[in-house]
Figure 1: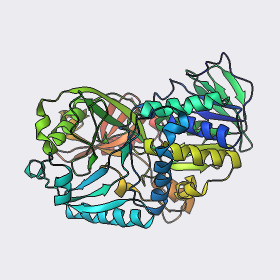
Figure 2: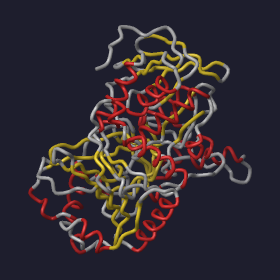
Figure 3: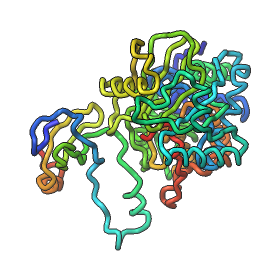
Figure 4: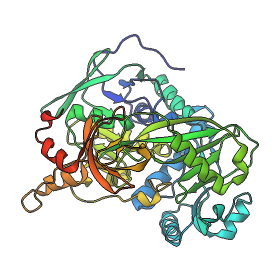
Length: 395
Length: 92
């Protein structure tokens, strides 16, 4: 599917660090829309092996801030014809998305999100408990008696997609347009002279380049150390798990912030489940029993009939968190060094729009208008883009 | 994790309180220094001094923990940690 290149060229117009969805999407749109083809994508592991292949595949745009809603809505729009664009079936499946509210405070946030969403033309509605019960007759509306469901935010365009195929589609599209993807190649240093990027050192030799895009999720702090940039990014593991396949019974995507659960059923019948972040900083993708136990207990609060269903697999990714739950994107104080980071627990759904906006930013040297609210200097200005209220679960 | 007050306890009994950091003097530092303190973090994995709390006894202490592999290297009562923190090289 991808060309394996024997060696690195001595120089490239753009070097992208990280062959996940975001890095490959940027390469794809740079080559397709901006005519920049002399690109190397450097990946220390394998293509799509990081958070692109570790998320729970949920796509939605029911965010809280105007910046977030416009940005993620553009992403949903791009998602919808991506399979055709790639000629590769992403199994993009529009399911509808319920964010359950178990408290009055949560209902208030759902109404707030619904109004912001509708203002920007995004289909979201605050719905009552009867609506939830009609759509989800199998759910225990009392959640075991201790967290009764009062209503929900219903987001019709909510969807899931086959996450690996996203990286393959962007990777193949970029490869066909002449982009070089170098797997098992680690960046060991970034050379900066007089505040400008001049090159990248890798385990397979040095490259000279005027532009570097860093799209490495949980490894962002380590790459930023190479160029001396400081950010609020801190890394916590985020775990997920998947059940054995069962008959189709769950069409929509279900999220409960109070119970710390999000779940959808794949085309193969497995339940893909996630919860909140691990509670302390750690740069390891180990799995814990605490997580599987806690998440299973909350799943059973909502769906007690699943008690005999087995968990097949459990894994983790490294989430690069920010204090306001919005990403850090665009130009940086180091000229020629572009950042696509701070994607914490919300990066997969943004893959297409990140590729679009970062390719524009790398090609022109100016932040795309859609990402102006996500710039690295917002912290020094004390201007957060507060998106925590739209996170799936209280992290 | 070895609590300096209660001895070895299951890790579930502890809550993480973030890295031990030195606050600049808010009266005299610049806006840039203050925002750096408020927001920026040392995100790369390393052996870091961190605040931890033994929840059952409400006892706060400092742990030196490697955030790459989750190994707790040492734990100190807050006062002892404060005395040992400068310079860090003096640690056992």
